Image (tube, rainbow, N blue to C red; front, side):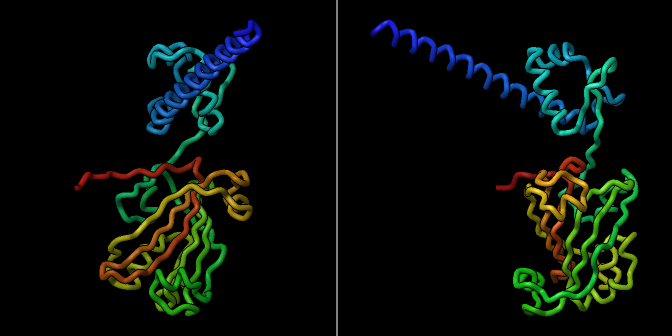
Length: 259
C-alpha cells in the first residue's frame, strides 16, 4: 500500500476513534442527566443545590467532562442554572400528574397550590365529525366548546380544549368554570360519578397560538393529552385536548403486568 494511502487510512482510523469517544461521552452524559433529572424532580436536593462536579463524578463514576455535559443538558432544559460562588442550583419545578386515576387538574395538584381557569371561549359549536363520533352525537349537532387557560399558582400550565354534549353543556354555561373542575360539574349535573377515560399522550410542537397563550417559546415541545371521559354508565361526556407545558409537568402512573 502506498505511503500516502497508509497515512490516509491511519488518519481516518484516528478520526473514527475520536468520534467514537465523543459519542460514548455524549451517551454517558445523557445517562447521567437522566439520573440527575430524576433526583431534581423527586426533591433529592432539598436545599436546591446540586453537589460539586467532583462529588457527582465520584458518586456516578463519571469523568469531569461527562458531568459537565450532563449539567449542560439540564441547563438547556431550564431545570438548573450555574450561579457563581454557589454552584449548580435548581431553578424550575415540575408538578406530578398521575395517569392511573381519573381526576381533574385541581384535584390532581391540590397539594401544590391553587389551580385557576381563564375561560377564553365557551359556547355551542357544530360538532366536527371526529368529535361527533367520539361523543356519539350526530355530525353537525351542537356541542359545548370550552377553551381554558389553566394556571397553577399564577403560572400558565395548560391550554384545555373541551367538547361536551349540549344537553349537559347548557347547564355548564351558568356554572363557575373559573374555579371548578369540569369533572365535578359533570358529576353534579348528571347525578352519577365518572367511570373511565381513554387517553393518548404524545409530544407535539407548540403552534403560534398555544405558545402565546402558554407563554412558551414557539415550536417548543408540549405534552398533548387527548382524553375521552365516560360516565359510570359508559356514556362519553367529555372530549378534551390538553396541551401541557412540558417544562412544568411530569406524567406518572402505576402499571401492572398482566399476560
